[in-house]
Amino acid sequence: MLNFKKIRLMTKLAVYEKKDGKEDIYLSKYYKADYVRLQVLKSIITATIGYGLIIALIVFYRMEYLIKNAVTLDYKLLGTYVLGFHIMTITVFGLGALILYSMKYDASRKKLSRYFRLLKRLEKVYNESSHDS
Image (tube, rainbow, N blue to C red; front, side, top):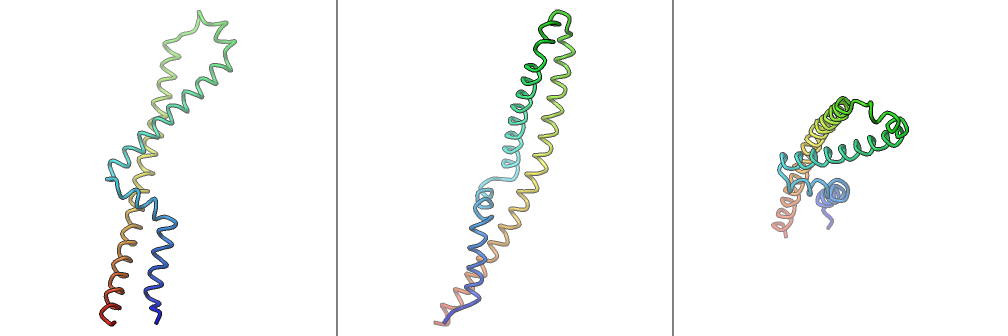
């Protein structure tokens, strides 16, 4: 005889494992601080690479002006602006990543706890069916 409660639980568990479960189980291997720190570091590195590429494009675009005025440019002021904008950029990206990945980790933990509750319910159903047999 079919146990519809067991089938329903197993279906819910399988759907979760197929969709969100892989990533949530992967995230559960990390402590929250370690996971968030790693993601913030990756965000800062990619923001720095992107910022460097944008600066390179600006330099190439303004190359003629830079060559004509190479002697008269105030490089200290120019470097200060570039460094200041870089610090602002990585600060924004770092804080954004900190908030986003903290929320993502917390949501993952909630879904994972629901998954484990369903597993415990399924175990109870199996134990009840083995006692009945």
